[in-house]
View 1 (cartoon, rainbow, N blue to C red):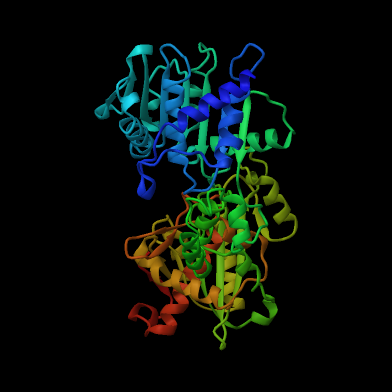
View 2 (cartoon, rainbow, N blue to C red):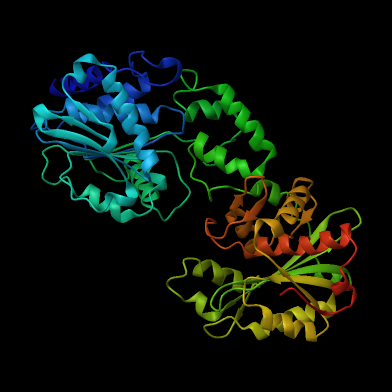
Length: 516
């Protein structure tokens, strides 16, 4: 009975508030069935024998546009004004100041629209604080980048969009700041992310295990609405299953519009899956549709390519990482065969800090990865492989990373009669070959032979976009190595220049180094 009363009180308080945005602004916050029955009632109505709240941590993960900000604000106000806690400290924490302000501003506006609450509290917008003098309590919004400098005695913490929090140590500091409280509550409300080393992924996995019953933790509340991993992202039935507000206050037309764009723009598919279907994806801005990639593997036979014209890109690693040497062989029907070779030092296969070491070993055993002795990349070995390939095939010319310290190996290759060109790593250099890569991929004219390392890198690659829509690979945001894909783009760059324009005087003169 006490639990029912507590649940009813929480629902009643929240429904005394009003919406603050769009066509619903000023309308009473009537909780949707899923909000009331699946979140608010169990979260606040499940009690311990002594009458205190059972749940201490809540992880709520739903797609965007399902009312997270409004629900966050309502929960925060309930914990501040209707939880019976003297001297309560309520913190709304988000990745940055702007995000933290979003939920605070909603909460403040909810209070302003309620005459009863306005008589009880003081809103101080300049410091993003709502004070409840009668109980000596306050609510404050703080960004994660400065939150670590505070000391806390929190009654409740609302962690907004946990998937973009920069560090896990802040979560740990906040989650352990509630020890002096009788019935504290830490609530994380977020959309799915992409970084599977983050605190959000850790909480997601824990919540999933609690929901399934694999982990028995009566203090942890989990609620996840997401499309199954293998679900058809274009199926509207899937959309409804993971978007509880769809058909209510969530627009189906907006989802249809975004899906249409994503269907024809591979870079948007991960965005749609992550933000609209709440699926954890591989990286922020997916560039390559992996199903499309798999559909055009073709067969790459080195012997049949012997003597054929090709263009190359050597993406050199740091002394202890993976190096990619990629060649592109054009054909009359506009398709291109991709032949790739990958190298790494022996030490990477046993290095405990290399989280891919087991996979490296599998690839090495199967002949896809060449392992060189020692702790550092054997540039002499790589150089000789390029020389051998230049003799075996008709290598017209090749790119190297102009920003990497490649001058020595470029000079040595030039001495062997190979034309080496320095390629910049900015938008200007990548814009055209990235578009050519997309054109060939969408036209199913990029045959890669199913190389598993290249497939892994294709699924890893994230891209950056400049204001004019130009793309370039983003190694810092990609979840794993992408050197092979950079290699393909660099090889296509050389191919395009020979297809579309006369060769420069540097290249017409024969072997040498151009702008390295």
